[in-house]
Length: 310
DNA sequence: TGCCAGGCCCTCTTTAGGGCCTT
Ligand SMILES: [Mg+2]
Image (cartoon, rainbow, N blue to C red; front, side):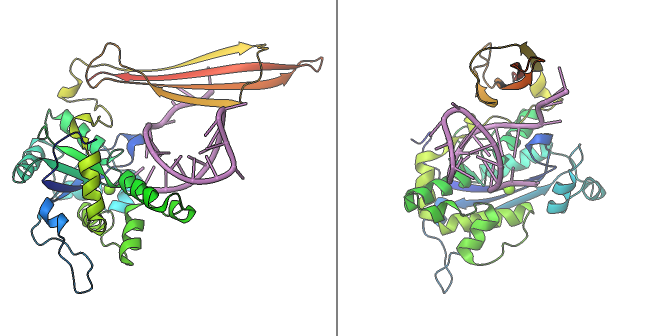
């Protein structure tokens, strides 16, 4: 069920950043290609019938200096570094970036659908983090589409569970190579990856437009990847992390699985919009031998809680 | 002491584990 009226413009998006979510990354480069729905419904094609980039295309690409360092891997694959960005005197993700982004989007017919590969788990939450830090917003009717689960799901429905289909890779590069029998250009530059993403979308445009109409998610539902330790979004908020160990000896209850990991999201308390509380519970049982030779066990319960309100 | 992303998918699955995908 769609959460919004059908999108009239699709804005393909890619972020390059200082690393993966585990390090609370910062955006170092953003690229957006805005394509009108009509260009996706009737793509331009070359002599062989293969789709080509729409002729009418608005592009925006900006580089910015993060405050924290890149991981070695992120710097290696993106070709960006704190030094090179500072040498070019690039400012960070600041109000000027927000104004440019908002001006770019305001030129497009709405509603807008943002499109990114693995966007629900990376690009959208990270962009949300940066925007909230600056107290900025996107048009309220903005929706978003993640091509990774969309294409996996479309392929599954197509193949009726054929084994061969499930073995294929769904990285952006794998999809491009599969669809076009060619290497993607400028991988891991934001603009290069947006170009690749748009070509992948064009190859499956009819299906993905239908998917967007049915499954696009409201931007308002996107949660930030993390809460920066500074900036206006932290006012009146709190972040709490706790790890609790409980050791029980001599338990005689039936043997459970050796290790059980159970992760659940529980409602925030009190109910504040945007609040997040996650809890990880890990149970382990260690069996030892008493001098008599009878087995004795030690149960270890680890509860890790992370909470925040926004 | 350990925590250090996390949701999705597949399978030698469901009382679980490991790989993918994003930088
Ligand atoms: Mg990307």
